[in-house]
Length: 266
Ligand code: ADP
Ligand code: MG
Image 1 (cartoon, rainbow, N blue to C red):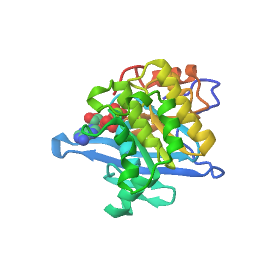
Image 2: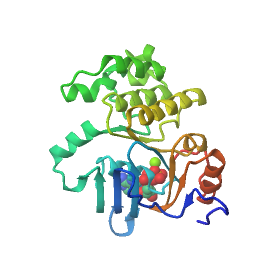
Image 3: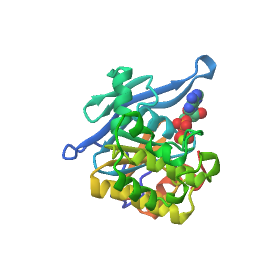
Image 4: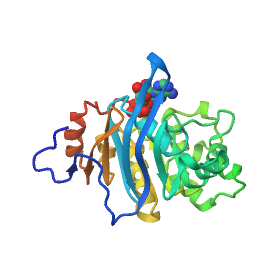
């Protein structure tokens, strides 16, 4: 990709800054699916640094490996080779029990489609991780979350009785309830109107500003990306550049170079 002239915030690759603490790192990660003629290399030697207490956006064309990266980062999928570090923890070296505990205690994941359990109500879905871990959720935080997400009157409904946007917001509440160190969200504003999208972005921003959590969000939306501290661009399963202090215009410029159509969901 060609850097835009005079754009000092653009770096052609992710760079390590020793003065900032890393929340997570992907080092030379390869993820292949299938075999033989059907083999697909979703991640092709991807290296990314995610700084702690930062809001990072991941952008790239459909099929560039964004969801695969997020799943590997969160220990939901396993890299074919390479290393994923969560803080000091090498996810590839954890046994199934420790990996499950790490996912539950340190990571909040927002799936693109919500991924709610269909036979549980919205409220039960939100409390699920805490229930499984035998913990009582922080009631005040739970009330604030559902209030800010605008779903407090939907908590007794089953997922099938909710709109796509409401399901997405329930998934966000579920991911944020335990105040995990790392929040990974795959297109969390994809099904939201702009008002609920904005309040969700404000909520994610406040997780970073007020609680020092680390947020990584896949998005196609330049408006959402402009709320973050840094945009990492993916192309063909590799990091293709980093945009610091992104604005709507600089995002459009660089994302245009990756042939991403804003508003199109991958
Ligand atoms: P993005 O989220 O950027 O649109 P993905 O990470 O979903 O991209 O996919 C990257 C590539 O890997 C695509 O070519 C996709 O078809 C392929 N891929 C993703 N998941 C699987 C899977 N489970 N099996 C086979 N191919 C997959
Ligand atoms: Mg995706």
